[in-house]
Image (cartoon, rainbow, N blue to C red):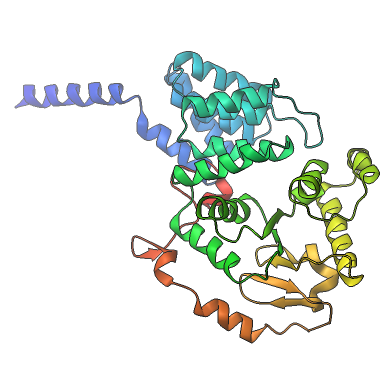
Length: 348
């Protein structure tokens, strides 16, 4: 019996060694998703010191460094992961995001970010994280076809849960024809784009992520590719980078553009209805709250003041159209993030 116990102990030690300390890595990843970056970094550094040739740990270490703003060492860790295992495809995305140019910087197809992102999707075409980064860069590089391709591929990979797609359809369904819809962040924006592209649903609606509204690249895309009137002349677009360099934030510029649209609506120069997703923070539309009709998934601008009461008829119409089962996953209210989504914000 004693010999059997000894053999079992040796076997367990051997199995633990072969597993590469997976449980320790899992704990470090859990800390990462809890946004406890300092502890995640400490755990990953300790793990890598014990398992220096563990490529997956190197990738997590690289992404943790990136989230902490340590871009150079992030890229070095990601490159080391690829040297150990060229199949660590997410390492390419980490390199791309760590090397990403500033928002207003000139971008080319030969820069590190674009090359690394294309390597990422060639390495693993099913990685929605890489396609998400591709979409963000395609917007800033004025690549409309790649924007459509990336949202379609995110849909194909299962990157969006059924609940998220159901919410996107619900938001779009009853918007007035040819509306501009202001959204908040990528998870508010891209599922709606995916529904438009892959289901040919409400393609008349122009979806505008409120942060991108403060960039010259996106404003030109709205004007030149989608035919949307913008309240800034070309000369004004040319100087936006200098305005940001002087201290203005992109968010402040976005609010100015939005205010310009409202002025155009008041003057009868803008024909498209303007709606604001319910996820957009109130500081974005602080001065016009009394002109916004709350309908459930969005607020709809009206020229007359209407007060703070919800639009009961429109709200009832929107609520009547809800199919509860579409918002569920495995019999419960669905998560907004796919299990393989690397974003802490979407996973939290």
